[in-house]
Image (tube, rainbow, N blue to C red; front, side):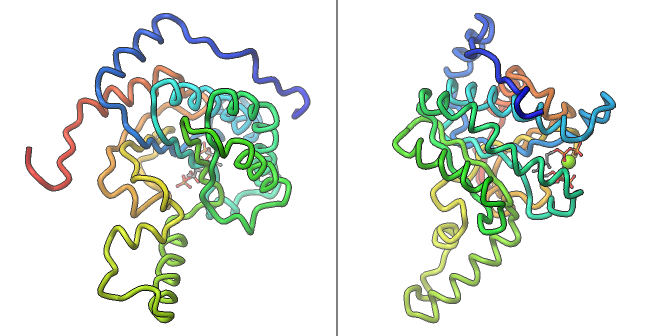
Length: 259
Ligand code: IPE
Ligand code: IPE
Ligand code: MG
């Protein structure tokens, strides 16, 4: 299946899409958008295909979404690609998912470089297969000078484990005199998380109709705007992203205050 894979030709947006993009850019665009890309398995099941076919299709949507996010001037796009709980899945499915970064970046990396996109990753690297990590690290290295959209893959990421690890590091730094207990505050704690270099997401999108976080960015999403859709990830289109942003722009963020 891999060698049959083609991403198609260079992406051009239709004039209606371009108009919508320009319209949205008149209002503030969320700086950090995070997406729980869910529903690949159900997409495949509906077509009597193996679940992995849904993951493969979903990868094409990652490309489209990234390019549009870049055009919109979104600064960071975090994509939840694999959770620390997803290892519970059948071995063949996990193995397939762990091949996708190579396949995706193998084809797509030149386009990312050309479009000034910077690749990053959050999650536990040490449990990833070597070939998966190698593909990601290569992409990180080759795009490190870029300063456009940051495409951040949450791969083998789990928020509770991340928080526990941050607490352990805080305790360690406190024991070693690097951090004073009295100095610990929310900003300093955030700097111990895997997302330390990112601002908290402004907008969280989850596809597939599930209304839950599934252990994603529990700390960081405290004041994010949520947008849920029944659309399955492989069916998520550019118009869906534009719709989410339009809804975001109509929301009033109060952060506990009053306007
Ligand atoms: C999301 O799609 C991708 C991953 C979790 C890796 P799913 O594989 O969870 O698809 P559904 O939810 O079973 O339809
Ligand atoms: C969340 O989806 C993880 C990713 C999208 C990578 P899941 O499909 O694993 O979530 P649950 O199991 O339905 O909560
Ligand atoms: Mg799912």
